[in-house]
Structure formats: structure tokens, C-alpha cells
Image (cartoon, rainbow, N blue to C red; front, side, top):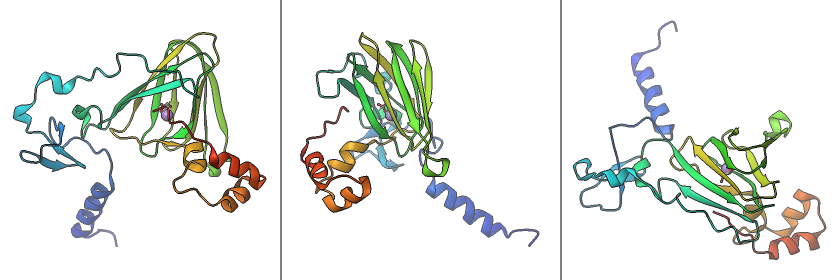
Length: 223
Ligand code: GLV
Ligand code: MN
């Protein structure tokens, strides 16, 4: 078996391509469109005819304004994913801005498809992420000040808490046009239909009444 047959190598390459997500761009631009008449289907979205592209397709103004932090978490995430910003289609990147009231929390969550790198623009944040079971669920945490940058590896649970007395603002970039979001409390205690209280009682080793209380709460989504 010194030389693998060429057909095997081609098959391996094709499989790797099929399993890849956010692959390298296949063409210069592929603006997501809902217009099926003139669309070409690539990477999960229809692409607008490139000849119809304008400069406006490459601009997103939705991060200009602060998000409203008057909510139970005291934080608001504003997304610039491919859904909001079609110009990102096939490019494998996206952004969010996160606004924090004093004491505001972006609660434990993870992104199944993207690594996140975050810069603090205003204020002071306590941030952290937890590794997988394989690495003993180790917490890596840090206090970040204006200008500091932190990276949250793909798929790991992380959070940010504004520990300053003032408003805080951060901007994040993701290694995916559609990194996805799973907020732990919302997914576990706010599942629809609810996860059996017997499951959660055993899993979290709680009194069943506490689980029933938690499942009766409305879990705010700050995105
Ligand atoms: C921050 O971690 C965010 O994903 O909003
Ligand atoms: Mn995140």
C-alpha cells in the first residue's frame, strides 16, 4: 500500500469538501438573495447575480446604534451574521456588538460553528470560557479593559459580565458567517416542549421543585 489509488485520493478530497463549513470562497462575491428567479444556489444561500451588485451590498449599518439593555440580563447583542448582512455570504466571517448596562451579563452560551474574538471598546468585562470534559472542564477567565482582546474557541461555553460602574461595549468577530448560538439556560430550562423534569432533576442533582420552578421561568434571549 505504498501508493494510494488516485480514485481514493479524489474521493477523500471530495468528502472533505462536502463536510467542510464556511469553505474558502468559490468566486469573488456571492451576495445572499431571496430572489430565486436570478439566483444560483451555493453554500446554503442563493447568490445574487454579481452583475447586479452595488456598493450598498457590502455595507451593514445595523451595528451603528447601541442595543437596548433594559432587559432582565442588562445586555443586548446585535448580530451582523449572513442573515442580517447578505454580503458576508460564503466569506466565513461575521460580527456582533454587545452593549452592557452596569452589572449586565451576556449569559453562558456557545457557538457551534465559530470561534469568537472579542475587543472591549468601552468599560470593564469579566470574561471566561470552560473547556470540554476531556480537558477537565477548566475555566479560563480574565478581567478585560478597554482595548483588550480575548478569544473564545469554537464550541466552548463562555460569558461576559460588566463588572464596572459604567456602560460597556464590545465588538466580536466570528470565524463563520453563521456561527450559531446556544444559550445554556434557555436551551436546558426553556426547551419547547420542556425536557422531562425527571431528566433535569437527575442531571443537575436538584430538588424536583427547583427544576419545575426553573422550567416555569421565561428565559430572556438577549440576541
Ligand atoms: C458574545 O460572546 C456573543 O457571542 O455575543
Ligand atoms: Mn459568544
